Image 1 (cartoon, rainbow, N blue to C red):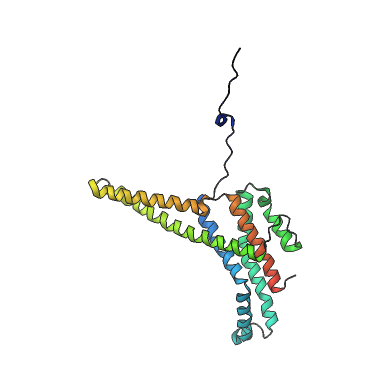
Image 2: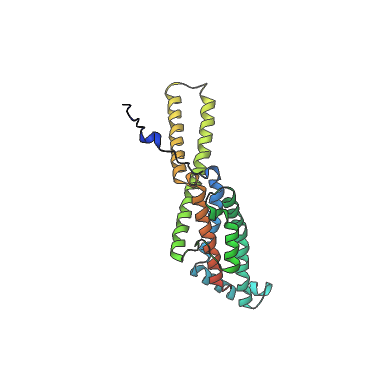
Length: 226
């Protein structure tokens, strides 16, 4: 009787296809996040109250624009919406060209429905408290990415220096410099793991999409835009 062959589980398990990570585009994404976080902070009740008081007290604004405070306040959401346009277009391109999630690929139509008809097909709008947490998360990513940028630049300089001195130095001095380069290389790799560099396009896309939907919603709510 022929014995039945048993293949190890590892051989019988198909390797899952890994989703692409953001990589070098992390710095571009961090820039978009920075602008979204800034706009979100502007919508806090404290900032809005401060702006309204500034408008009411400013003689210069009234001379240049109008004496009607309500009219001046009515101009603010239009400017905020205008600032959101390039950020929204960026998320749409990201979703269409790089994300695998079908909802993100359809972001352009979804956000259009949200702005024009108030329809949120994927439930992306967040309550204030959750958006605050998302904003804090993005701020951490922005900070880590800034550290990563500086670290990569320094590592590049160190590697070039190492190449230049390898032929002229030897012994303990060269070894010490090689160790310095290796430590910086490990530091950069750790920063990549923690930063946007190692996040998937879908992860980043959802974070940005939720932020865009929520900010549009709060602009309407805060300034009474129908």
